[in-house]
Image (cartoon, rainbow, N blue to C red; front, side, top):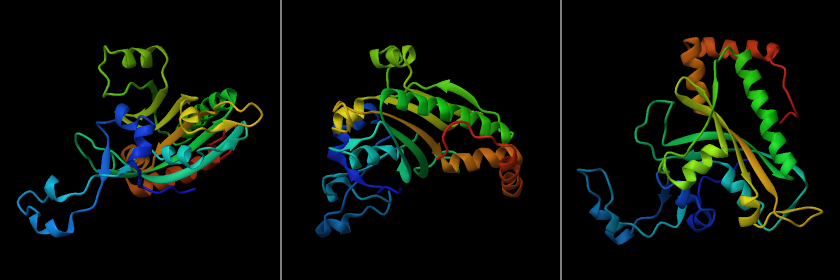
Length: 244
């Protein structure tokens, strides 16, 4: 599936997006047509006074649209959705393919039972490790703590005690992650589990496509060598778990 790059800001707020990730948030709006002449050539910006209220958000992950798309729906206990979408993140700096304002993300989202959501992450953690080994791409897996949270604050402490996100890093760059949400999105979006009527559990596996390109070219030295390594890895890669 592909998902739209713009979502209603009100929907993202309902999912606590602006509470949890304000440092990454990017919004979109239209200009006031009768004030378009106030564009500042010196700064290259439209002043805030020339803009309409921002009603649209550009999400930092593709999976938000999946949960909103399944709102008020019942799902089987083993539902999987694969999606590719444009994502946007405000960063302290931008650096080639490593860190971009707009980038593409491939996600595989699990919706259903707790067991399904948990096994999804275990299966794909093994698949990522096996694929990276076949690519001769050394990765390390680390628990991630959102940088917005005060490291001594309750949310940061909870994340360290019970991590909800693990990242796979090449050098210092996260190129993939596995994320559990328990039944948060099932509850907020009224996604119910067939047979029980309770809120569905969800989890997702995410791949930053441009970041993978950056990691592969850094590791193998050139586009051509990276492409050759990917083709060669197909013969060595033995997938673990269900294919998607």
